[in-house]
Length: 263
Ligand SMILES: [Zn+2]
Image (tube, rainbow, N blue to C red; front, side, top):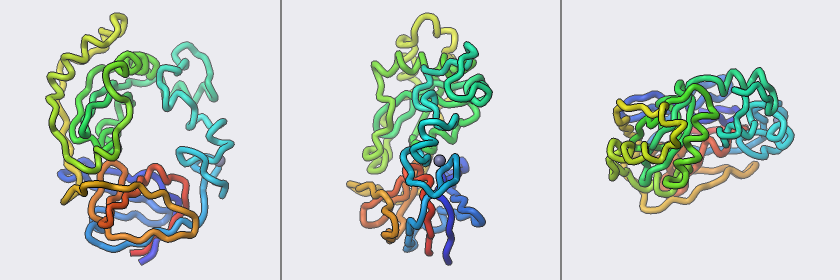
């Protein structure tokens, strides 16, 4: 069977283990069913996530022009503290930013071998954590907009990483930390003006990924144009496909590339 379309991050379903789906134009692949099978992925063209043109992908699935101009690639996505929609100030497109940024946001702690702090829209729970390959996560604060969450995150970055260590995440299942205890500690790091957003209650979310055996080391592969990648799929964690030969593909990191998948 052969399927073609632009790569987009995999859709997920919270089950034990997590279920993964890849939507490719006319097809919808249930990736868990492909574990244990050989597959070939060939990158044949580009399709920018915003303008849809076949232009080289620059970053985050966007061509260079869209990366610097499209509202959905604006800098507040990566740095929530830059958000100014709550002041009515436009970054790229005020209407778009108001809709995206002026909604409840969560500041969380997540563990995938080490603890990181992050920000997401409340409605992205638990998908944001699954996309990051977190083994467990907990809500620390809930704010009314993206800016407030960003300010809390900035303060917490003094104590925690804000990026997932993907190598660590892919080579071990880790539940070494007591996130409830960590959250109580982290409360002290929230600036006084933002203490009111701290969430007292809160369960620890636990995730189980479809990974049978963790490989001792992994190598991330970027798909190259017209150079087919072949491998036997061994598992999925975060947005990574893990292959038997220790190579891994970050699906999200290859967004915007049009691929043909042969199974
Ligand atoms: Zn574009």
